[in-house]
Image (cartoon, rainbow, N blue to C red; front, side, top):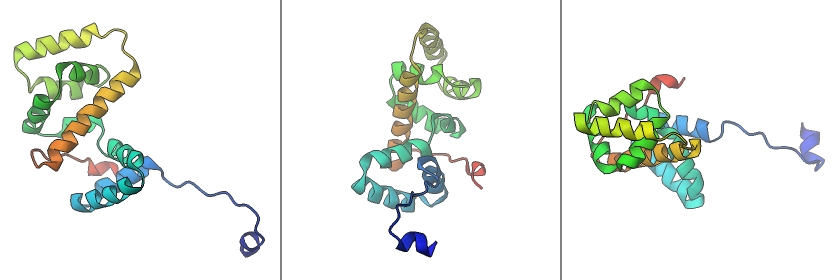
Length: 154
């Protein structure tokens, strides 16, 4: 190994972890430390910091939140965004949002979801990211507490 490095021969770097691993690590540290680290990353590469944040809190993670937090999120997102985001999720995630709405709002949302027949996966993903970003803003302001599934990490 010493000869390889001293000879000046090119070596390939190894990629370890990536954005998903960084997001998992950030979920394990205290919120203030994570915010400090993300601020430092953002100073160097804002897109990377945003990508890590997007992987820290995925849309289906929101289903683990309490009902008051879901209601706060519902007040901040548009019906159109919510319909797109819920189009591509499992029933339990969809139900978490629906039970926090009035019967009339539920019916309207379900109709909107049903009407989305030819929606692109990228549109669904973008709507989900926008809602999770809204949730993060609410958490940063102290209005809600984001739930993190720590059992996913070893």
